[in-house]
Length: 125
Ligand SMILES: [Zn+2]
Ligand SMILES: [Zn+2]
Image 1 (cartoon, rainbow, N blue to C red):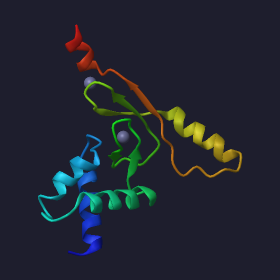
Image 2: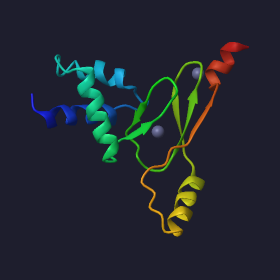
Image 3: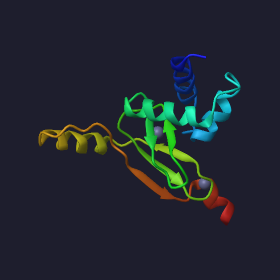
Image 4: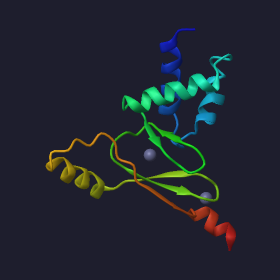
């Protein structure tokens, strides 16, 4: 099994998910196509893909999550169910632009809000 084929598979799995999957989620999905792929290989490919900017790494407390959407956006992570939601923010792109105005080059932006999501708050009542 070629090295790049594994990377293509990992990328395709991230691209097909809207749920900001964890490395373990991606590993379990990848095994359906390449049964002998290792978790280490999945990790390595996720690192390469996020370093090259093809996917976005979101550093969540319980372990990194991965996102197909690489444009400037924030995330909200529920501390109860662990779900990660996209938070579109125009202000964030403007902020990055202002940093660029100072001559710096913004490569990556990570903004993470943590709290309790709507459905977990409901089930608490
Ligand atoms: Zn929740
Ligand atoms: Zn996202």
